[in-house]
Length: 360
Image (tube, rainbow, N blue to C red; front, side, top):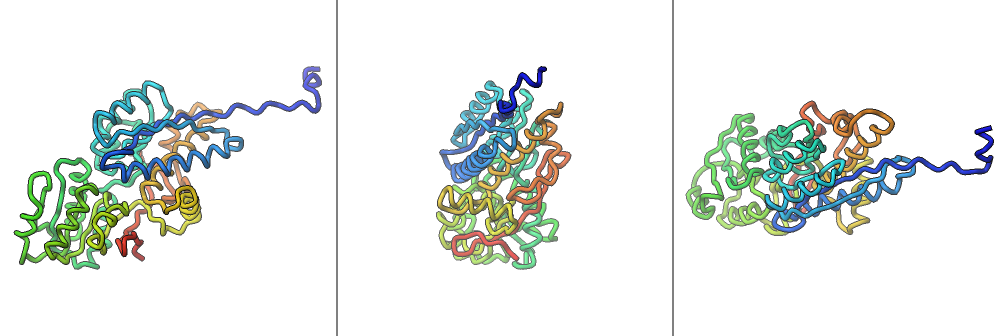
């Protein structure tokens, strides 16, 4: 009798979707905007695509994006605001040197935070709620040096670092590690925070070395490339993760040609998922994505996949993210390590005519 009361033609209301609230803190102004804007574009594309399939997936994403201007105070304030709103997951910040204070807030609140672009050492050491989608410099840089060393005959190098920036310092540590693994040495280190680059380049004239290792963010890295070439040094340049933006070539022009950089991803990656992402991004924005866009996009995929797996179970979102295995993303088949670090294969690239080309 109870069943017959529902009428043969009466529609059954679909279950309400699982709402996933995502708070994003990225640098949309300031010198780090070259990275943060790409991240947010990748995030926004992923959200629009996934929400179009809510009826099938049972998950709807609600997105809040806050600009941190690449500075400590606004970044921490943005995290505090989103934590107070009890969002389900946080993505950010853009810069490694902002991450410790921001992620401490997420950790204290028990909210999973994903570092889409934070590549410095120790990002996930804050606690078990902190994850990283970006590949760390300690993974990418030594692999890049191993690939490039035979090409440039690397025996001695000059390291350029910005001691005022946590990312640059961490990238420099990874450069030192990679150089040592190649049984090479660093002839001299130049700290842009305390030394004048033009003066230090003059002191290098006549000395024998095989490459410049350049780790600062783009605002200082691009002028450094111009200064190196203006001083008539022809040695190749190997950059840290900050080189993974075409803004380096836009600012430095031909001085960027030939520079090498390792990366989590390149539009030249030919997997089906990567190609589909690249085509959709180009259609949405009118230009190809860079690594940072792919990492932003993938961060949403990681959170979304975890949210789907928590449906109808007692599994927490944090535990579901930690259990991510072989997730098909533009970056490749991605899993989370025991240290909550994304695991997938990096690529090595070279600037050629203003574009980043994957080495075969």
